[in-house]
Image 1 (cartoon, rainbow, N blue to C red):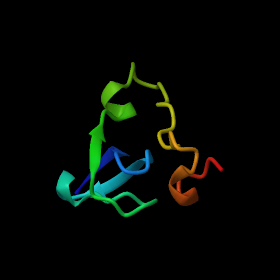
Image 2: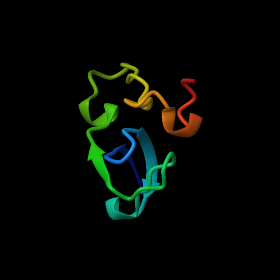
Image 3: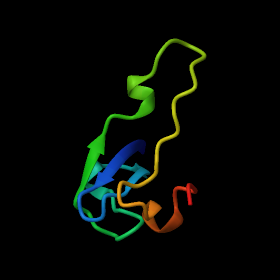
Image 4: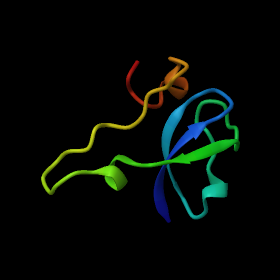
Length: 71
């Protein structure tokens, strides 16, 4: 299983999910499977020792029903 960052096209939620296939991902906020894989902080990362910026949060301001912990 792999950890991916996703963006929900339905509610605007950004989240991480551990899935076998990208098609298995579901939004924790609205349970939609209409999600788009995003470039993760680790994929973009910098030099060793850099701490990636936390992912998560929601464009809609709902934080996926509070699952990202930013509320």
